[in-house]
Image (cartoon, rainbow over all chains, first blue to last red; front, side, top):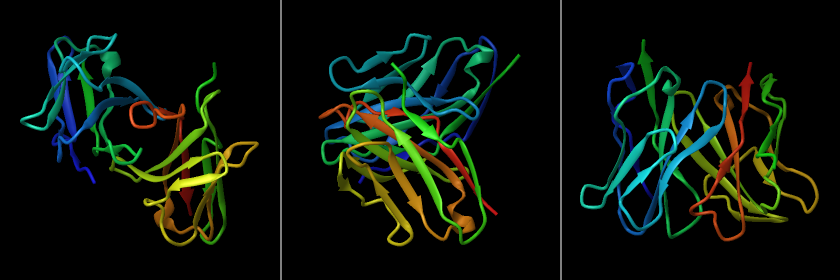
Length: 113
Length: 115
């Protein structure tokens, strides 16, 4: 089984500042990696995912994440945040045995005007 | 193309009652997954179903919880004799055949409150 760690439970950041949300997982054996975003009282929306190929993946709204196999990390970054980025962000991992996703505990991003 | 549908969105039950949560997957998806999100925690896998089959129920509590995905109709997560510890958000996800490992679409969740 996988273990997914999101060390920062809450991240406050000023508008237009850069942000990094950290994610580490326990095993790099053939994993797929995901970031989901959850707005208040809504379901999870896929932000971006790494399946194979380039280790840097991007979303349409300016987020990016880099798969680092040696550090078993998949940190999420954005160079300049907006108020609308305020939400809960979940890192998730799947592996080649089974179909379940393993989720971290989430990071609450609050963008301050 | 409608997304994953879940109902009800909010459900209140008293201790000892039964809770039934429904999930309709995206059109064309035949695989359904149920996850539970306890307060202040991430989502935890409960069960993976295909039409008329339970494929993996390794995350389901051994008692009081059951799930089904009949040939016709939505998937149902059933919790008998609910207790306060069952209060959580329950999310359903669906995927196309053979893509569960890399593609799961989530519904809006059902928030269960047990009084």
